[in-house]
Image (cartoon, rainbow, N blue to C red; front, side, top):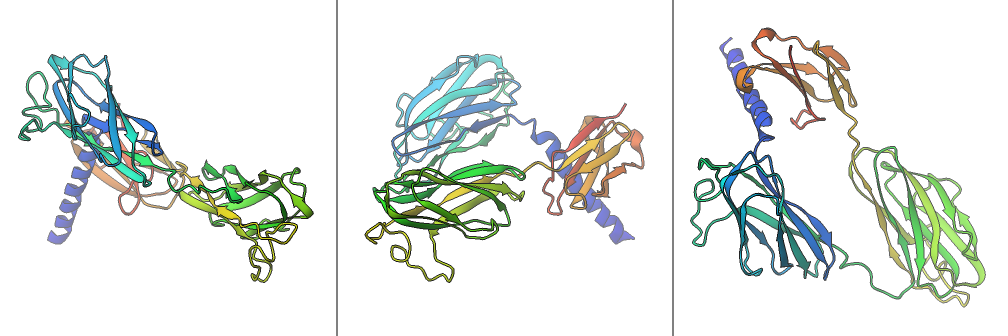
Length: 400
């Protein structure tokens, strides 16, 4: 009996802490750095955003970045903050500091300032842009004491969320060689997307054969439409389930066509978010023994084309298929992955204190029954996986 009571007490403490954190975390004021993507030599703008601010008199920040990858070129502060703006005089200061000061509270929320960076990195990747409280000239400032407080000198309790600049494009093939390039697309489960297959820098082919590979657990090939302008006879695999899917173009003499050879239509059949490559390579033949430039992909003189093959991708984003409906009579209806995870129903009383929590199997529809419902006035329902990750957004209701 003692062990059972102790286990229940531990469970209760865990849930009190988890629910309390989820109840109050959303209200914390925060400073968030935005993100951007660009290539070497381009400029990107990064916003610094203040959220959930209920009033500040002093606000001081410093922004850090990799100066071997990024160069700060401009800083433009919002004119709507309602406080005096001060910034470091030189853009080369790193971390770069900024401050806003007012004799009384300002309740501004939004973009405090926009930073402009030039990308000087030559290697693709993510380069963090960090934010923290201003440490002062001597590095001895205390957050909420020397900086970041309200008109009553109470600390703001800010949360700091960093951003990044993603550098892309530096590994793009730079070549005048003839190439076959597969396009890209984005979608969710149930969507159909079209992927072009493009021939470029072609100076003449008599034989052209390629095969397209993809993840058939995520994608289903549903259609293939070839261009009518290639000047060659088009042949394709008879069954769309062939993977890799093969296509060929043949002509007695050279054709100098450049452009979209064919457009492939895929249906996204999985809800697993991620990046799924669409590969392209030379056609290997029925027995897999073809040699590129010999048995396939040559000109009218049987000289190899020397093709470069550039794959594409489909970005799959997850559908928010799971949801909770909570009615006033405390009937819960779940949609989506029924039978997965556990439903947690909590009732809260004065000062958002949790009074009781009940656990339910993730059935389609059921009623919440608290032992003493009169102790609280707010009910919150959460649907979590077994690892305590949310299946969907929580639902709350205030009892009458």
